Length: 112
Length: 115
Image (cartoon, rainbow over all chains, first blue to last red; front, side, top):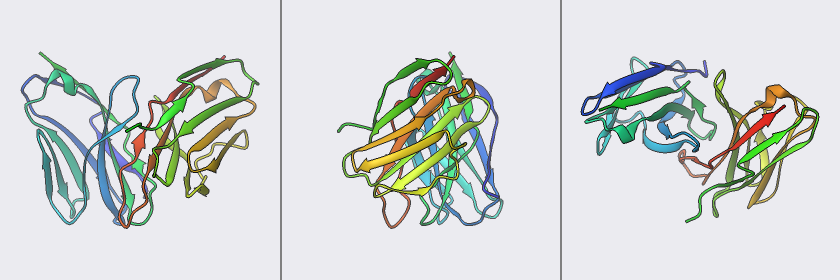
């Protein structure tokens, strides 16, 4: 019940295209959903996060869409650039509990 | 602002040796997390501390692993004795506890290889 399922495992997108990564969860007590971006040799860094009281959050080219009834959330990267090539992790946590449950990661490659 | 600082960045040692990984959290952060990352298992939380007290160590794989946080600015993760299956990248992260969940800030990790 603590799992967060992430797909796809890897994704190749052409420069300028839209990258979409999906996550699904079971535990309805989750109330914080961050996305982390990790470059090779670096630690994960917070990219964008959403709470279930909104259905969408946008920051620049990055958007989280959240569907509470379906228990799914997704990351959309608009106008994808080669610099976006990285591994992306979704995560979730329960209110009042700082423990993050991470998805398995998506390796995104943006090709020219 | 300095981020989370981990040392060493790389460690290669022989099976059976003691390994100590170190972490300095961001000043003012009162929660600290140790993670392990492998291809097979992804990112796993090993243990986390709040105000220097261990809160959840359910992810610590076995008694060979131990973690301490003697003060707000320093933590160690120790493996004794080390085994080849402990080879992984170990991350430390810190956050500031708040009324609602706050982002975790990760260090750049220690790449550990046990021969």
